[in-house]
Figure 1 (cartoon, rainbow, N blue to C red):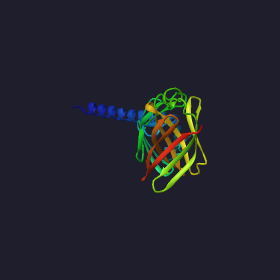
Figure 2 (figure 1 turned 90 degrees about the horizontal axis):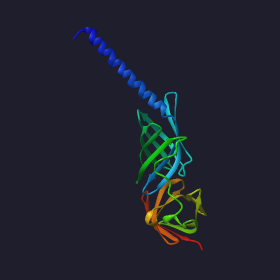
Figure 3 (figure 1 turned 90 degrees about the vertical axis):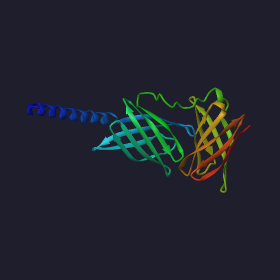
Figure 4 (figure 1 turned 135 degrees about the vertical axis):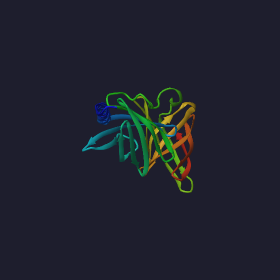
Length: 237
């Protein structure tokens, strides 16, 4: 094999390597932006928020906005088409992993015993996956209103408050009155009238309240961070 041929081969390999690095660098820079995210799980339903990714002085940074469950980003890694984000949701670490494909990023997440999937589209592109639960028709019909709401924590006591469920723009939203440190941040109604409420306590959570709806009443059991109990909601007349 001639020396000239070997030099040419080495030059071509170097060029391919440089091009690969350039493509990877372009791909990473191209993922900067604002993403509309929908995260879903069987326990918590669908949670929507905004994810902002940016690169400053060679370092990646991320911010989560408009989330019903406040989250602070503690670390972020972007390598090629992969991204790993760790957040703090009121003392509970949330691990978010995904891959980029064009203007889309998607993957899996877990927080304690809760886990699910997520998908984000760059701003200007509607979120195509994990749609928010429908608030009209089917199991969701007639669920809006005020409820006498009680959560019992085994060996700890009970929390009594008023739960309010509204339909705003085709989406069910929740709020509580006299809840103190406890708040209900979301609701999902599935086929078979199974209702999932999402709660937080002193900012800790998310706490899934799984149960079933029968007529104007709802109730079920819950477990979170070593605690457990029951919950019930009775619609006010």
